[in-house]
Image (cartoon, rainbow, N blue to C red):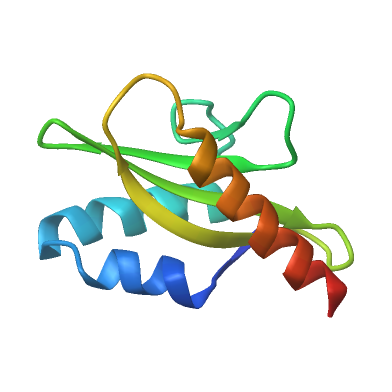
Length: 107
């Protein structure tokens, strides 16, 4: 149903994780690609065009920030990832994703 494109930073983030954490994140991506739009897995961040893939594993909250490429049908572009330390997504992470989105959409 959907295609997820991992940009370099997102790929590196996933690659650097433990195999089990990596597998859990890939499972989240697969579910969203299959059409599962459960907010527990994939949620739009308020006031932005940024979405986050949400994966919990062994007490860690892994996040991949992303956006929709509306020029291409059903394409979700993952910009980068981080381990979330608090309830709120850090503003600097959202701003980083927004910069990547703006640069990507210039192409």
